[in-house]
Image (tube, rainbow, N blue to C red; front, side):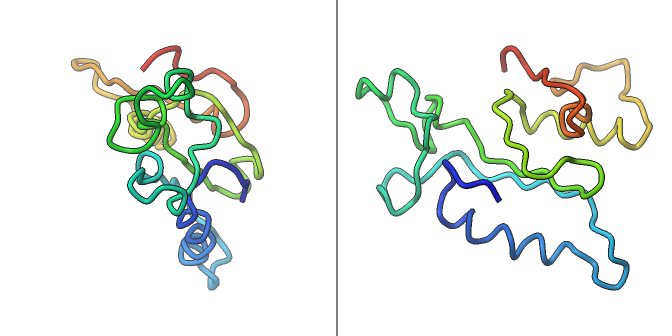
Amino acid sequence: IQSGPITGDQRFSLPGFLDLCWSPSSGNVSHQNVFWDNGPWSEKCDYAGSVGPYTGMWQRKKGGSSAKQTTWEGGHRVPTVAYWPGKIPANVTSSLMLSTLDIFPTLVSLANATLPSNRRFDGIDISEVLFGYSSKGHQTL
């Protein structure tokens, strides 16, 4: 697990969560995506963890908040872990701009299916990013 701007409870809970996902009888681990909510709880001050480098210029100049329930940068960056042994490279940290909206198109692609063409989907297929073949995320969200 990479150490960095992640709240204390997340760093504590992830190993236990992954242990629950592992099937000792088969030796297989399924594909897991773990998303947390948006940043530490600002009312808990330093006890809730750090937003790390995601404070943004506005917050560094004492404007706005960098924690959850804000529209500033720290309010919408979310720690995420994607885990799929043999498919997703281990111990990789990315700063690409991705979205939870990308999960649906990605899972559809991994299932070798296609999205309906008569409607618009905001997410993109990020399987190439997850597998380490691409470094292209969103330009804007």
